[in-house]
Structures are given as structure tokens and as C-alpha cells.
Length: 283
Ligand SMILES: Nc1ncnc2c1ncn2[C@@H]1O[C@H](COP(=O)(O)OP(=O)(O)OP(=O)(O)O)[C@@H](O)[C@H]1O
Ligand SMILES: [Mg+2]
Image (tube, rainbow, N blue to C red; front, side, top):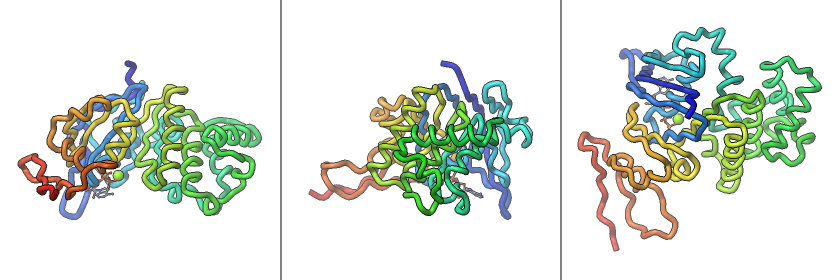
């Protein structure tokens, strides 16, 4: 498979008063035209990995042996060149669209602007393309939605608008950081379906960051399990149920089952023993 991304020995540390705090500790992976999931508990460093790829970490120190994106060396890429990578070739969809959309501009204008920043399209052509894109993310009345302000759209619609905005320059890679965790279940499935179809039809590489192992297992092709800044396991998604690492097994066991026996929730043991402590189930 053609590699879009090749990352070797990536380290990221945040600078703090007590010195550098390493949060990503030497991870390596590659990404083809596929759906790659990164899962792990809160604080394991998933978002930091996503942001490091886009060099969106002004206060962090990033080092690696290799950070190659197509013919672009992200390690040596200067900020001026990163501006051309971000948004146009590699986009990030964030958890909450409210923080990403500007409240004082109509949503349609913001999507159109995202397009014009990366192309020399006229205002009219950009509006046309925006309407098409809004339709592609299954917004039924694009003309009307174009003229709404961010506070006038629901969470699910806001998230679809964000996806339209990230997709309109036709990036090669999309990093989706918990893109659906603020959405209810039905809207979540719609948004995932849209992402899925776009990945397949446009041959995009997708990195899906989530703490939800079930979601990633059903949605992705391949899954990397992250713990305390390291990858502990890599599996084909369909093979995840056979995971061997105790941490992965712990994450699996911590997932809710519908209709399963309701015993006490297993407790993840983060100690050195690498084991999962389970409290005894009551009958
Ligand atoms: N800007 C920052 N400055 C200092 N430390 C940070 C910063 N951002 C994150 N961290 C720390 O880095 C570690 C990894 O954070 P990160 O946000 O990457 O985790 P995550 O796996 O995405 O978690 P979550 O599932 O909660 O989103 C955490 O301990 C966090 O407190
Ligand atoms: Mg995160």
C-alpha cells in the first residue's frame, strides 16, 4: 500500500516549570489510504500525536527520526510551508465545532473562505462549491444553512459543517480527533457514514482518534492502542478481539455490553504489573 505518512520514533514533550514533560515517547507508524484508529485512555497522548503531525503545538518540543508526508519532510518544514500543508493537504476535525467556527460569521461564508484560502476560486465559484459540499455531508437545505450563524445550528449539523470545511480543499489526510463524541448516537452514525464514504470515494487517509474502542473497532481498518505515550499494540480492527496486551484487554473489558451480565465494571490497573484487576462479579 502506498504510504501517505511515515513516522519514526516521534517524541513530544510539553515545556513546563518543572522541566520537559514527555507525553509521546518514541512512536512509529505509517498511514496509507486507509482508516487508522488510535485508541487509548484519556491523557495517553492521542491528541498530541494528531497535533504534532500538523505541528500545531507551539509550546511543545517535537523530535523524530522521520516525519515524512508524501514528498514533504514535516520535520524540517518551516512554518511558512506548514501553512500550505495545514488545511489544504492535511486537515484536522476537532471534537467540538463550537470552538472551531467563528461565531460572528455565517457558516457558509466560513466554508467558502476555507476554500478560497487554498485556491484561486472566485467568490461565486466558492459559494457554489460550498453548497455542493454541504449537500455532500447531507445537509438538506444548503442554501438556507449557508446563511446561518454557528449558534443557529445543532451540534450534529455543526459537526457536518466542520467536515465540509475540512474536506473542501480535498486533503490527502484527515485527522479526526473524537469527531463524534459530542453527538448523540443517531447523528454519530450519520457523521461516521459520511466520513467513511468520503474516505472510500476520494482515497483519503484517515486517522480516527478516540477513546471508544467499539467505535474504532467497527469503523477502522487498523487500530493502534496507545498507553502513556507509547503504542502497546497494533491490530487489524477485525482482529482486535484477539488482542493480547493486558492493557488492550482491559480497554475491551471496560466497554459496555448491551444485554450482557451487569457485574461491577472492571478496573484498569495502571501499575507496573500490566494486569487488569477485576472486582469479583456479584451474581
Ligand atoms: N498544552 C499542553 N501543555 C502541557 N501539557 C499538556 C498540554 N496538552 C496536553 N498535555 C498533557 O499531555 C498528556 C497527553 O494529552 P493528550 O491531550 O494528548 O491526551 P489524549 O489521549 O488526547 O486524552 P483525551 O482522551 O482526554 O483527549 C496529558 O497528560 C495532558 O495533560
Ligand atoms: Mg484528546
